[in-house]
Image (cartoon, rainbow, N blue to C red; front, side):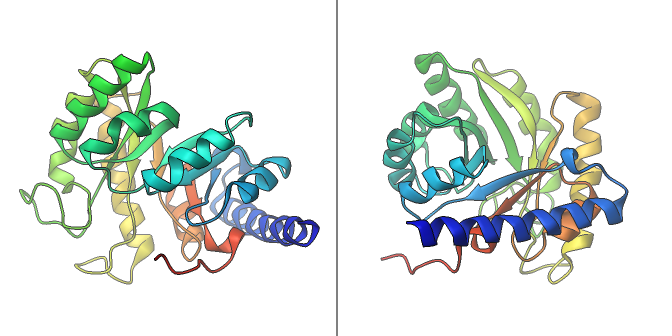
Length: 240
């Protein structure tokens, strides 16, 4: 366990250096960017070590893994983020531990999240997942996310839903379409959409973008949160 703690501490320090350097290059203050460590496929023991090392935000993408892990770590001062595609039948479970859901992409999910949040007596922050490879009018993309032209209506639906608040936007640098291989351009486009969103919903000021391979591009574009997994925890084991 001591070796694992040392490895995590070293990796966190390297990621911290990358974020700090990216902030300096962009003329931003380091505190403008929040690190979310994506702990999917890794055990609760790693989450506990990360907490000891000062991490305060962790993310999961599968409820069947996240729910028991969050329960085991419920004594820790952590905010849990759900970042994967979310099926409506998992919503009641996710609302029990997640403070923010980054993958809201359809009205049916908004309705389910609202009902579960009210039932649990919680307020849930919702980020709209934007699919930058989706065409206007496409609705929800195959890999999750709504086309940019669908963001305003979905944000209004979240704002009008009891127990929910529009928190901002999330994206993953697309593998296809005009932004494929161009993460900086993709994140710049996300920031344009975020500016329009804040005009209508000023408190929706989170921009979740950038992962281990492209966090510098996200910070340069203006992201407020970066989601880093393998750079902190190592190459992920294969899922069964």
